[in-house]
Amino acid sequence: MKRKVNHYTDEFKLKVVTEYVETDISQEELKRKYGFGGNNCISNWMIKFGMKTPNESQIKTSKNYVGRNRENAKRVRSGS
Image (cartoon, rainbow, N blue to C red; front, top):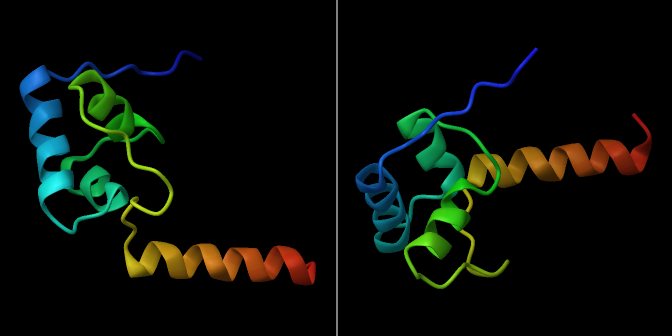
């Protein structure tokens, strides 16, 4: 089964990247808001538009997303 590949306009990509850079909205929240997926979309779009790519300390994450990751990490460590 083939994956569906979405092609977004440069205007859309720039809108998302600009919103990411200028607000406190995380990449995960923007992906939910605009209905797209992919782990590196926004970072790749930042590179495309010549914006500095975020390093780990600059990546904004929602509290809910961070909380779920912490819970999952605890489960993995405890073997549950």
